Every structure is written in structure tokens, then in C-alpha cells.
Length: 544
Image 1 (cartoon, rainbow, N blue to C red):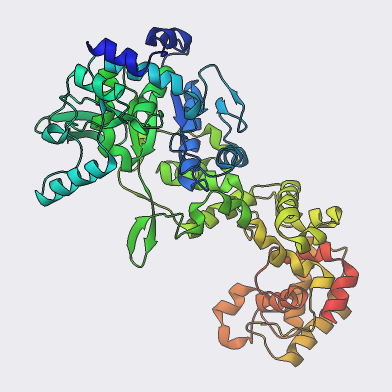
Image 2 (tube, rainbow, N blue to C red; image 1 turned 180 degrees about the vertical axis):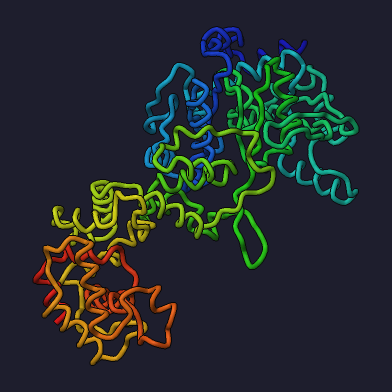
């Protein structure tokens, strides 16, 4: 018997690979178009790294007139969790990263290159595994788990590399007749790749991000079809990326060491390999050191964290582009009102080393993002978040007309307010604008002017002599200056700074007294605008 007979014995019903080569023709796309994908496994909470990869892939596809697709890699069915695929689809949707092709529900997909779930592509992998067997590039392997454990123990005792290669590949040199005999006797087996590599030879590879890298050749005879009939990741991704026309594979740099194996698989299958771009790992500062961001240790590692905390998906995407390309920050500064869709993302401008994921910086970015929102958008998004996560805030926001006035304070001008980083900040940030949430009898921190009699004197004189809700902003501020002057304070800050010993304070200290009495806070958006929204009755009540 020969290799073809062995292949027919193992996969009697598998089609010839020509069937699939015709079924999935080359894509008709413009020159330079990138076909890219994310390929998560449904094994738990979606990682922020998956969102990061989806964002970058979608940008590249859009910029080049290509295709972004989602393929669910669910061949490790022992680790699959209930609703795992739904979590992936929902997470991408929440970040506005829906694919051009791929899974759209747990059972439905769109696109002509599916199925987009690897567990549904079993017959395809069988066809290519049969092809490899018939070529003598793969073989059945019959060791039990106990025998493999024993093999590993011997390697460790001999202090050599562990794995299935060379003299340790005990089934590699079985004759076809011996293999057939074992199969007919009912022995369990898996299918291994017959690597042509040697560890003493090097391969050179040009990574799109890392540049030129050099590795020892792969000499491991890895498993390509497991005992359950499903493929391993290594084999499945090579078959899928070939048939789906993937041009570029973006993946974390922990996969860099797999390049020799993957290039070898593509070569032995007769496929043109995609270009690999190994993106920097998302790192986190930890007691002075850096470590990989972890779902186990870091709540922000889960994609679901951002929605729960009320951080807009737009903010997260903006931050991820910020750490992906060093040019993004300057671009945003020059184009404050443009969509991130207009930013020209470049793979070769990504950092080679790890990218530091900093929640403080992300929240700063988010403040800038929200500052560009209209009052209507702030209201809509805050209300939507509150309806799910904060019943009290949802109740506060029921009066939409008033809430829009509150959110409209210092918004839409050249220097908009930046006091909101996430929707969970809203309740505390605006509570003083609502009488039933404002405790006018609380002990406030007034700053420089803290004497109660002096504070009463300031507020009383302001109400009696200077307050008029109909004043325009310039008139209003001139009256604050006049109030300061009448009470013996410098009417201008610069006058006070020139001769500080001459004055007990300046107009800013007077306005701080009014601000704290009206809001309970020393720092707020524009006081004039706050007063216009609070209205005459509330102002008089609080100041008195």
C-alpha cells in the first residue's frame, strides 16, 4: 500500500482539495486591498486585546478597500463556554466593529467564504489533511498519553528540547503497511505534520512590524488533526487563511515564535503565506515593573468592563489608536473634530516593544472625547447607560429638557468643559444642579475666604445689590468686580498680584465664595452659565 491508500483509509469520504479551491476563488479586490481578520476563541470574557486587534484590522481594511472578517476558532471545545460566540459578536457590536464578513449571530453568518466557525469546517480540514497524507507530508501517530508523558520525562532527564521531533518522533518512520495494520486493529491515533525542517538551519523572515527576524527552522511534527477529528489551531489557521484570502495576519507578539512552523505549513500545503504583523503586547505597570495585562488580575482587561464603567466605546478606540501609532496624538491635536476613520493608521509605525496600557491616560483621552459631544449626545449616552446600571441617575435624567440645559453648560465652545470621563461620573458631577440632591446646609470648603461672617456678608450684598438673572455675561462679571471692590478686595487679579500686601484677596476669591455657596465645589464649569440654568429662585435660596 502507498500514501494515497493510507489517506483513503483514514478519510474515505473527504473531497479532493480542488473542490474547495474552486468553491473559494481568489477575491476580486483592488490592488493593495488588505483582507484581514480577528479570530477569537469562545472560551470566556472577550479580552480588550481582541477589541484592539479588531479596531486595527477594520481600519486597515477600510483604508485599503479590503475586507475585515471575523472567524470563530472553536476547535478547542473543552474550553468553550456557554454563549461564548454571542459574547464575541456583542462585544464587537458595542465597539462599532462589526465585520464585513463572519458570524453575525451564534448560528448565522454573512459572506461567501464561510463557514466562519472552525467547528463547521471539519470536512474542509479533512480534505487538506488527506492531501497531506497522500503526499507523505503527514502521518498517523498512535502513542497513548502515557507514552507521550514518558517520552517527555526522558527528554527532561536527558536535558534536551521537549517535543515530538527527530529520534523522538516514534511513529514518523512507521511504514504505510504498519500504520494500516494498527488502524485496522482499532488503535487510536491522531494525524501529525511531517516537518521537513532541521533545527540547525535558520530561516529569515520580514515581519511587517518587527522587521527582519531570524529563527531556527521548525522540526516539530505537530498534531494537525486531533483524536476528535477537529484540527489544531496551527493547521486550521493555515487552511482558513488560504481559502479566505487573508493577506495580512495581525496578532500579538507572543505568536512570533510560531512563525517558522506556520510558514512551513503554508509551504508544504502549497499556499502563499500571508504577511505577518506581530503587534506589541498590551502591558500594565505593576509595582515599578511591567507585565502583560491579565483577565485574572485586571478588570480593564475584559471588554465588558468599559460598558459597565460607562466609558464610551469611542474613547476606548481613540485611546487604542493613541498607543498603536505615535503619530495619532499630533493628528488629533491638529484635527480635533475629525472622525478617527480619517486617521491614516500605519502598521510600520507601531511600536516594536510592548504598549503600556494606562487607565489614567485612557480617562484623560475620554474626557477629551466627551468634551466634543453635543449636549444631546451626552444626554442620550448617559441615559442609556443609567437605564442599565444606575437607577438613581436614570430618575434624575427623566426631565430631559432641564438635563440638556445642564449638559449644555460650557459645551460647544472653543474650550469645552472636560469634567466627564465616563457615564458613571455623571451623577456626582451634576448633582449640585438638582435641588433635591444639593445639601445647602453642608459644611463646604471655601478656600481662601473661610470666615463665615465674611461669606455671609459677600452673599448678602450680592443678592441685595448686584444680582440680576437677566444680566449678560460681561455685565454679570463687572458686577462681581464691583462687589469685590466695595468689600475692599482687588477688582482685578493682576492688581492684587502687583501689591498683594494691600488687599485681603481679589475678585477670583469673591467669585469662589459665590461658586461654593451655589454648587458646594471650588471647581466647576462656567459659573455664569450654571447660574443661568439654576434660575433666580434657586440662586436666591442657596445664597441666602
